Image (cartoon, rainbow, N blue to C red):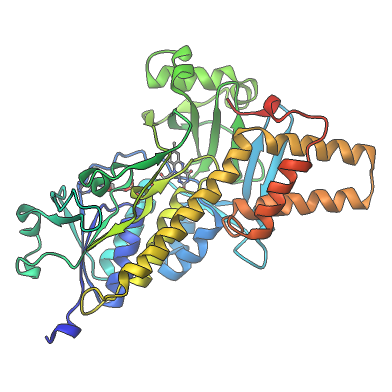
Length: 432
Ligand SMILES: Cc1cc2nc3c(=O)[nH]c(=O)nc-3n(C[C@H](O)[C@H](O)[C@H](O)COP(=O)(O)OP(=O)(O)OC[C@H]3O[C@@H](n4cnc5c(N)ncnc54)[C@H](O)[C@@H]3O)c2cc1C
């Protein structure tokens, strides 16, 4: 084959949703793609609650029917402040922009579906830990990564040639960043999260609704899953977690029992899986790409699980990246500039999610809601109703992913944070 026609060689490290999505889309375009995965994925993986912005991605991948079969229809999220005060973020707010629903999915089956789709598109999946070597690691402009001879030998079809592009999709392991000593912007929260699946628990209403609950220490989630099961997770400061015991099981059960509503509504619960733990996950890398390498999904950054942006950012970044890479002829000279824009998009969107989530952590969203409720009591009538619906619509629209970076919604939130709270102190509603 003459050089311009040969398929671009791409090695993707990690078969999570980010890695398999970018691999699938590049293979469909005609690139020669291998995915190396170490097969160390635990049975239980967080990331079960999705946002509507992912549904069009499923449609483009041609997998929505199968996601629907393996998952649960999700109409929205209810964020509770205490026993009887809550905010409903319904995805109907996205009408006209995005589908008005999302799904909750068991990760193992969901990840296997995307992997199958990638393999069907021509991706070769190699179960092996990728061994990598840094090249010019001390030169920030030229610092790069290559496959070790041992890993390259697993890809005989490339005749000993290195890939044109290496994609880091290793998730929170951030292989390239660690190899190249790249710094990261670390988020302020030092939380630990425990979760497990339970049976014998009623699902929140309406069916499929996810609940995010402010707790005495930190917050928790309830995600309805097929079975029927309920995924219950808690997220709290590491020091606070120790109040509930020494093991992950003691801490998860202790936090559940300490919340009157959760303990009451899930009083008959039976745990049917092991308890899985995550820690230290808020960070954004200083760089997303360099010569012959780029990062996608969590390996570039992840800000916070509260409103479930993780898989959305992982798969949308994978789509964006796949669109930038030439499928034939290797890399072109304009790719660096295109990847700069990709990195900028990534950083801005992670920042936008972080900004929205911060408004829940610091109590301003609840303080706004209390102000709105009080205003409606004082001045009942059409105007205060319309204003409050407008605010809810914008917050819900941001939570779908559709409007997360929409200038008007961001401006409205900033305006309300500054001028919209009367008679309440956000600190009283903050999440510890
Ligand atoms: C507490 C918590 C709750 C969360 N809840 C949600 C939620 O409800 N909804 C949501 O959308 N997101 C959620 N997330 C985020 C979500 O889990 C991640 O954003 C998502 O899994 C990222 O996908 P990824 O493909 O980038 O990485 P991953 O899914 O982590 O995949 C990385 C893959 O790389 C492989 N790998 C690593 N090193 C190597 C190596 N050397 N060689 C070969 N393979 C390797 C790993 O084994 C793994 O298979 C949550 C995160 C946390 C911490």
